[in-house]
Image (cartoon, rainbow, N blue to C red):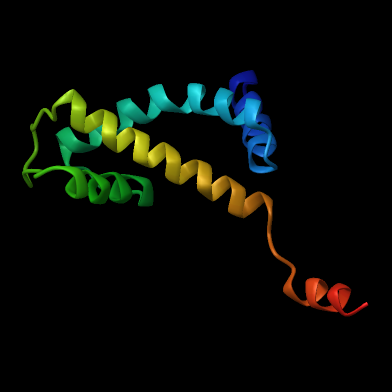
Length: 111
C-alpha cells in the first residue's frame, strides 16, 4: 500500500467520525479521480463494478444518456454526476464509521 492510499484511508476514517477538515480534504482527493471515472464510464458504457453502475444510474437521473459507446458527455453532466457520487461515498463513510448497536442502545437506555 502506498502513502497516498494510507492517507486516503486515514482521511476516510476521520471523515466518517465527523471530522469536517478530513471530509474537505478527502473530497479534494476523491473528486478528480471521480471525474475521470465518470468520464470514462459514460464514454465506454462499461459497467462491471457497482460504482460504475451507480455512475450510469446517476447520469441517467441528470441527463439523457445514449446507450452506446463513444459518447463524450458534456463537462456539466460529468461534474454533476461526480458530485453526486462523491456525496454518496461520503454518506457511506458516515454509515460505516458509526454502526448502530441497537441492543446495546436499548439496554443502556433502560438504566
